[in-house]
Image 1 (cartoon, helix red, strand yellow):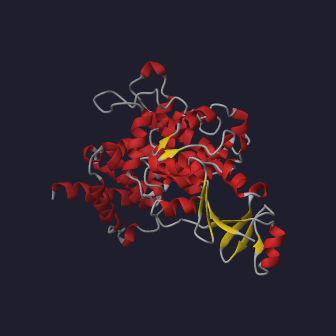
Image 2: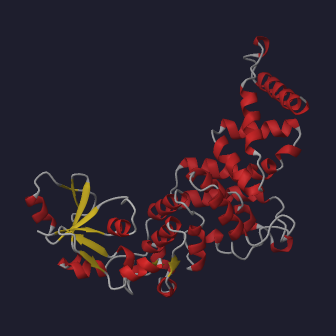
Image 3: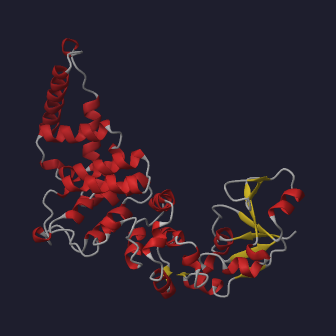
Length: 368
């Protein structure tokens, strides 16, 4: 039974990178593989996949290597390395690797599995310099919305979450825009490239351009990237007659966050973080101009939700100011302040007194 290292692992080796995961294909069926490897086990919902020594082994599609390569998503992933070190490649795989080009492996690559379109967007986040081949646009246009709607929600959500952790996460949105993939999973973002981010005094370009910039600025912290994704979602609901202004967009954004979280089956932590980014990024961007009471309330809300590090990172990127160091120092100051014994265990009175002490400390820190 011949065994081949296949897919992304071979691609990464050719690019001089350490493979993220190892996948293998064999020229026999699963039963034959299990007979040859008694300590292997079938895994997941597919009876074709076997797990052995922590790696997945799958029979070649249609029983042949050429058919297996042709059935893969992208040409650069249609690669196989046999036990003798011989490379087997899709007809354009090596050329596309050389040219940093993302090309579908076959004319029906996306039709067979529409989720591959979102994987394509995620892959673009991992390799920011790579370009989409024109076939991506042409073939994506042939996929009906009904086929995209048939993808399990959690699988689309998983691709988004993976993209948030990559070096250039904003490209996920750029690819969705380029391929017109907003419906049905990201319908609320459909006009994001056509809505101005704000008046020229504050912003240039669209909400898409601004959101991509902020997401990429906080790359490396996936939760902060998600908060950057969410912070200006309220601008997508601004009445047309108010543009380019976005009065009150921080109050409209939470509804969009809740819709996306529920639709894509995202974790509760994503909802909490996204709501915070929507609701408070405007006030936080004016941090040095806030009165002590408002400043304290922003600091306290952010800190008690356990998102101070991520939130202030996004505020820095959004405002193009270095606010986080002062905000985090002030947060640390608040944590040193406790209630005098006579004010403890008095319910709302205790809360009011603690807020008063916090405000006094913040006011004093600015005059010191």
